[in-house]
View (cartoon, rainbow, N blue to C red):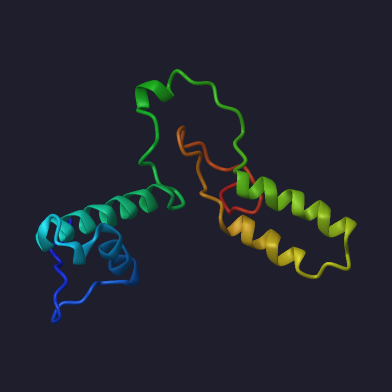
Length: 131
């Protein structure tokens, strides 16, 4: 948790931090400024932790190794890559839509690379390790 405290000489570190302070009620004086800062920093830390879990390749939500050994997994295709493949079909059926290849590429770039809980790598051929 950050030790950042907002004062005139020490403004919020981001617009999000400022919005959180307002939402908590910095100007109401209910829990005092120290309480507001602690609550703000706790919210920012929670947001940061949530974002870290969704980083491509993250293993923060992966099952323990002893549980994984008990599973029979099938080939994993991420939702993003599956959508990218569906967009391939849409591109063929709608050649007048010049924006579809960009959407397809964006979907493949958003792939998290491994299944969130099992760690199984995405089997889409768009990835160098896939094959």
